[in-house]
Length: 396
Image (cartoon, rainbow, N blue to C red; front, side, top):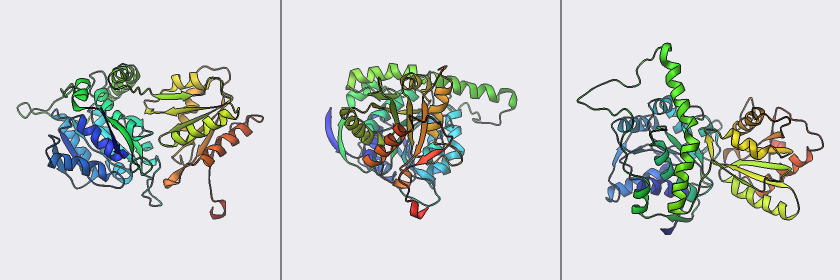
């Protein structure tokens, strides 16, 4: 294992290289483009034995890897924002056909207003399409999760596509040190893909994703649900093997300082690093605050999270997606998990919106959320509304 300097985009591409992907189809879109540019360079130089397909749109990119996966290839694509929205029609096809596609989403706000910068509105728009969703905090997680994702997706008990979500620019374009395993080490962990599901054969032609009547549609969807239900036990099994080989373990979430916390902060993605720094500082001052960093959003680990949150007086959830007309998506999931956990008295959940359209989530932002939540403990009123942080009120 060697240490290299790379940003999140490079880490995603290196993860695909180490996974020995066989087909890459892509269309450029900021801030994702460097991922597929690097893979194109690797293929051109003979460092990756794969077919690179230039397509005319993101919709076509996903269609191409769906077709390649159906004939038994290990496939890869990546996208962001409006590109992902254009793919929406076929994201359900990838999941419904039970294809182990791995696709990083370099998070970028959906318009309007038009933006090149990060929030989670793009990936949150796909959260119920049947894809497993990981959210990475740093480049090391990006590289490792790509490798883990193939092993998980291709397991015959799962056979579902996977998104690796990484914050645009905050992670995609920030360089840091990453431990890169040797190719032989990855090969020992991730064997060549052997199609576990339907594999198309020209000698035995058949149709895929045909019109399905109501008499069996629900049953097919239920099979996808059953596969989602198996994700966490299979992920733990695979994750423990990954930890033995590479020294890093990736559970669905990480809880820090939560055992005696009065307020627990819930985060996803790069904001988790800032939150950890702030929480540690407040702990040193005697403030009983904890941090729960979510790594897997789909399937949602509701039962397990409820066990961590149940002793707190209040939970502060920061969403990087507006949740217009309701609460932030992560906040809704946390509320739903606590509501169904069987607790006599669940902690109050406060919903906060921050970091939209690339606005930085700073130490001050995190501190404001924690201070505001502590301020409600004497008046535990759970308003069904999100509080937007860092608003420039004179412009609203």
